[in-house]
Length: 370
Ligand SMILES: Nc1ncnc2c1ncn2[C@@H]1O[C@H](COP(=O)(O)OP(=O)(O)OP(=O)(O)O)[C@@H](O)[C@H]1O
Ligand SMILES: [Mg+2]
Image 1: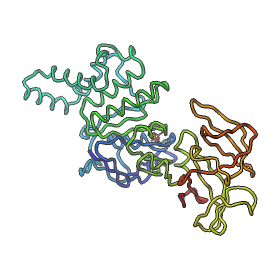
Image 2: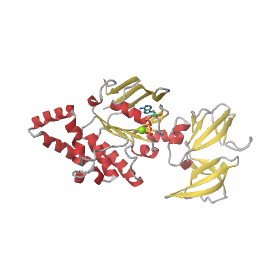
Image 3: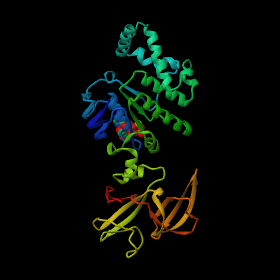
Image 4: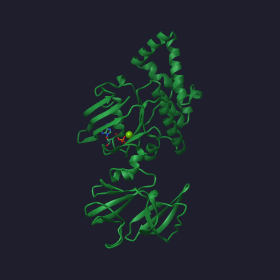
């Protein structure tokens, strides 16, 4: 099922102030894909999910599931499964009872299942058990069905919460920071699980996270938000390589992008140093001050590039990065290739790989990509 948000705004009003938690958001989530909402705390991710679920009414705008206008539809009628930020399982119920809970406690679903059971000539309880087993099988927790949540690891509890959401066979699955309570190793494992489950079920899934690496790794498409406003949406790798503004450029990347002061004079870009120094490259831009963004993995040694002094090198896992400083005191981080010999206090000349730098104007908007 395709999901479309048309100029959606959510405003919260308290006694003293109004907060636009989501501000004029328009985007389309393609059917059968895993879509990620990404952004810092408070940017409106959960609010967006709650509007999709029907828990929060929209202040303005429209919401469509395929061609159906669902803006005013109640949560029960939306066929949405949701795993909340604090995926509370019922502690006194077994895993089996937790998963079957929505099937036996929703009037609409129970009625539908009773009809199906009749058609298939099996008891209602048998059909519920079959559905529970099917969901438990997808998330691989069939051996824990008789345990209670307290007897499971965080990752297993997480999978029970997902099973409880998918047992309803929702047309849309909403996951709000589903990995936030897990340790680093389990986070990695569970995010792959979510990817696998989504691929298996092909349920249109919306995944909320503030962890850029998570979003880049498992999502087909992402939307990056800031202060309730959509910054950019599309394929994660494309956005990583082609950020529309400095915020997006900085938000994505395990090694933060380098943002350097620069100026343009007569269609030549000067990265650093006093006037008259060798230009870094030719550009077609009006004279003025700019920022240049270069990702650390795109910086290479080059004989006619920018002169820097290496301050220190840091080894992180299998990757070594160097921190260096330009003649005019700007810091630059780069990933060391195997051929690069960078030691503290050595001087290097640096260039960059082709098509790997962005130029931003003074408002942070990208004006040039090269
Ligand atoms: N019920 C509410 N009443 C008033 N303001 C709210 C309410 N819910 C959220 N907000 C405000 O709306 C903004 C967006 O909140 P939201 O919960 O959507 O952020 P988020 O992106 O999910 O953040 P986090 O990553 O911390 O979960 C915040 O400024 C928040 O304080
Ligand atoms: Mg949230």
